[in-house]
Image 1 (cartoon, rainbow, N blue to C red):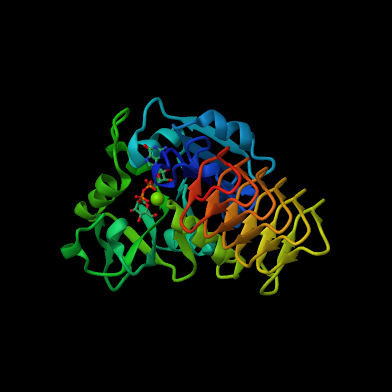
Image 2 (image 1 turned 90 degrees about the vertical axis):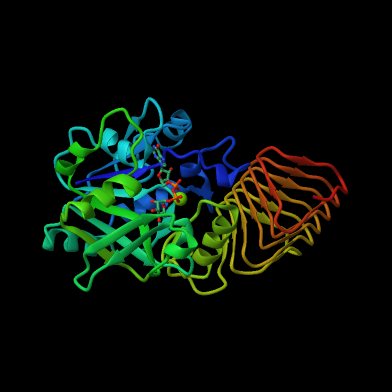
Length: 352
Ligand code: GDD
Ligand code: MG
């Protein structure tokens, strides 16, 4: 079975983090986000290849992910000549595939049992199966109504406030039969959510819902990106480096040098080769990517700092996100809600 990961979006809501690096390879702890999805796909023994559906910055993704050896499954690339929308992208990416296709939106983090979804799709001989997750406010998602037998009765993308009739939304994970793709035109932007799914309902085709009440998040905004890290560190999502670890674990990567007088509170993540100097304080729910230097008495609280950044003496970073190779000068402070793009520099004693 082939899996398609839809990873062609621009990641605009994650700017400035996604100005230099596309969303699929934004790091979660110290691995590209995409690798967490490939970890999930590896549960399904039938999946023998991942097709990455791309259009924005494909070269950056290819350079990082290569043939998939590090990720653990063979990876192939399909780069659209221009954005084809989710439906057009799936058809373009899966050209030549005849068997059932597993499709995942490139920005969802979950620990769902994919084998159960595959089993449901086969049992029901469905033309399409969509995973649903309950959320408090469906307006930013695809609302999906089902009947008592678990068939999809309505698929409404981005419902207005008066159109919300249930709490189950499209989790961005599908099993699809490529034989149904003849309705998707070639070379035209076409939406799986706004066109293909409603067409299945309109034609009365077997379109099945699989509700999963486990962990699920779309990491497409800075707030949900931070949230995902906190949830992984707290064990709310069984994935990543904290999986199966006791609560409050301090993860220290290989080759870290932590001064005896530095204070690290769990749960936190300190990547490979970091240097944490005397008196520095790294508070719980902080994530520091590989190769960072945290100066004497510097403080990091509830923040995410990408690799190769440096904080000077007495610098403070609270409730913020710093991209790669940032420089925070001595005594400078980065405050709540700040998101600094890669290579940002804050001179000594500045406040952001
Ligand atoms: N290759 C390709 N080409 N990929 C695309 C394109 C395209 O033209 N457009 C979007 N994508 C990819 C994005 O990179 C992302 O991984 C996925 O398709 C979904 O696009 P988003 O832009 O993140 O959509 P959304 O979050 O507003 O809504 C979607 O996801 C929700 C769950 O997170 C929809 O599928 C909703 O129905 C769903 O509830
Ligand atoms: Mg999304």
